[in-house]
Image (tube, rainbow, N blue to C red; front, side, top):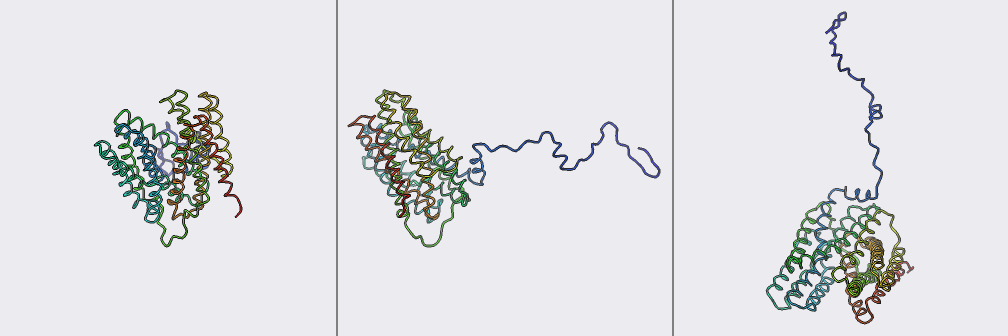
Length: 425
């Protein structure tokens, strides 16, 4: 302490001098550890997508509920054939379920549009859940065959979870075409991922755990995922009040042949590949090769979400060209060319599906979006059934390599159907 004149000065310890106070701008420029802003990466569109409130919650439920879509058919076939000793019965039961879904699915979607996702999807899922449990009990107890058909038909009330998720993205991303394109690409990649992993998981559970394990696991995942999905109320599209004019079936009429032909591509490609790989002597080891098509589509879907959308005609031309590759590769009788061709063929389907589904969103009013999406999916499933049956006949009569001509021809038909959309009326 020191005294200077009449002022008392407290002397600070000389060991720790106080640095001068710099202006804020000078402090910022002088900070050596300041990080430069992060450059936008390839995943930036998806980071922005899932930064929106509530999107991660409904996406988690969506994926849980969507995975069983690739499990139910395989699980039912393995369970029924293993317990009853008849693949014919197993195939007839699953075919009945697909037919029931084609009839009931659009009605369920219409109710969802009119009354809200949570109000309809939860009881509809409960009915499907009980149908799966009934199927397991009937198979296990040796009940009459007609009970298997009735039980599996009850699962047709399963809501189209992919359509409901796409409807949420459309509601959240109104006015942002780029983000909506990214969301639709993600949904397509999720479809491919679930249909790639679902059959593998179902086959493992039915063969290693119990014949009924695949169906039971799929039913629990469906119910759990749907409860998580519908609990996210903040992102649920509002119900549109007032009269509903126009029919989605009439609006989507020109697009349905395109979806039907695309379904034929999927169904015929799978049967032709299974038969050809079996002819090469791969047997059970053919699974990873078959998964290449879905893996290529999944990867292409995610990549397409980071790019500017292509025109539908461009996507269809690329798909038609890519579908000739497995046909050419199969004629060589070698596995490696076929594996590469299936990968490239899968990569060509994702942009087509994303772009055509975006066309559905553009044509259908928001208040009837679930119904419109379900009609599109129903046309795809019908095409898958038609393609699988026709390809099986071609395999029996002309051989597996020739059956690859069917997906190539179906892709050309899809291109022709898409060309009609661009003609002036």
